[in-house]
Amino acid sequence: MVGVGGFAVTPFPRRPCVQGFFLVPGLRMSQALPSTSSTWLRWLTPLFARIQAARQSRLGMAALFSVVLTALCKLIGFAREQTVAATFGVNVDLDTFYVALLLPTLCVSVILKNLSVSLVLAVSRENTQHGVQASLKFYREALFWAWGLSLGMALAVAVGGPVLLRVIYPSLSPEVMQRSARLLWLLIPYSTMTGMADFWAHYLNSQGRYIATSLSAGVISIAIMLGLWLLPGLNPIDSMILGFTAGAALDLSNLALSLRAARLPVLPSPTRWTAAQTSMISACLPLVIGSTLHFGTEVVDQSMASMLGEGSISELKYGNRIIAMVFGVLTIPLSQVVFPKLVQLVEARHWSELQRVTRQMAIWLLAISLPITGTLILFSQPIVAWSFERGKFTPESTMQVAAVQVMYAFQLPFYLVSLLLVRLAVALRLNRLMLLGGGLNLVVNAGMNWVLMKPLGVTGIALATAVVYLASVVFLTWSIRQDLRIRLTTSEPVT
Image 1 (cartoon, helix red, strand yellow):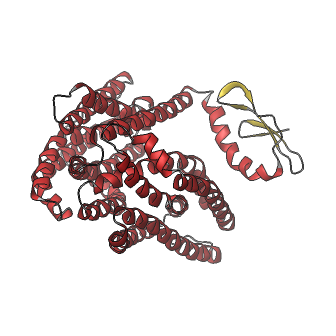
Image 2: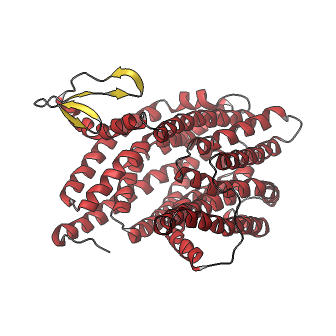
Image 3: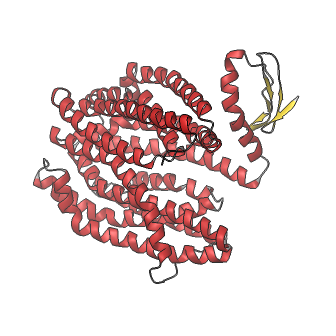
């Protein structure tokens, strides 16, 4: 009997047997696994080992608890989507809201989130080089400029946002653009607080404090639902924006209390601009550029959908809701199990093994995703009806959204394999390849949207997304294969 990753493993010829605890005390896996499961055993053993180690430490238990909270918040988010569907259905009012939400989402998701990641990495480096007190001082000073950037971006969006929206959505009527500009201004407090909270959230995670940050999405979703339920006298859009704002304020307060309870710094420390801040911004720029190219496909999709008439943006959003939830579940193993394995193989320069593992994981991803894709395609209409058909979301809306969901479902296998290849490219440090791939995706997306939206409408835009990820798989496969061929020949990394 040999100990592997915290588990007792008894080797048998072609029939390995695993014994150990899995989440619930007393639950053992003592059944002999058939030979066809040896590949799964090799990949699942590190995951089981992490769970076993987590049960033996406070930090690990907090991480596991945060996973449970994250899953609960996903369910709350689904309930929020059902509430929004019942309240608005598929109409121009919801289109107007999504138009207004685009720029705040761009600022938070593309710029501030990546800046918060760079800040945490810089703080960790400062802690390693100069100690805890120096890292705390650096964090407070960097937070001062990060929050200043958040406020500056909010001001820029408030001033220039309406003009930029007219550029992105030239086909929308002046009345819709006027309402969108008003909603954009109402969303400024929400986006500002969300951006500021993101710096606290990443810092808490870096300190092993996961629970408070896991609650963020759930708190905002609950506030949105309460706004729609308890304020019937207001315009529903205004009620929803009030819920967004109140939820962001509650989340900000929750994170501040968590920082104070952990005896971590809460407020920034005013300081002048230094070379350390310049270095942090420089490290953030490649991440921002890559995220901008990725987010650009969503901007292009919404912009071109707005050309197809009222309710088209809403149809596109609803059609991707279930697909996005499936992505959220299936991509967790790629981040938590597969990516660390790829990094280890790259650091050890085991290029042949890296190719074998990547090929094997691509096959498994296809084997898992194809049945799910088929299910989503065959049962798209009942899935949409059960999820959204209530209130103002009519059976006609179900037919329209189900057709969009069918087209979105085609992207699932290509998306997962593309994400695996992206993780591999990150492990290989192929930064230029990432930027080139993001630009290629943007060009292919715009071109295929234009070709397919004429005969198919909104469903053509959804189908174009599958073509984009197919092109991404082909491009990344060819590029990474060329890189690995050089590494196999020279045994040196390509810069």
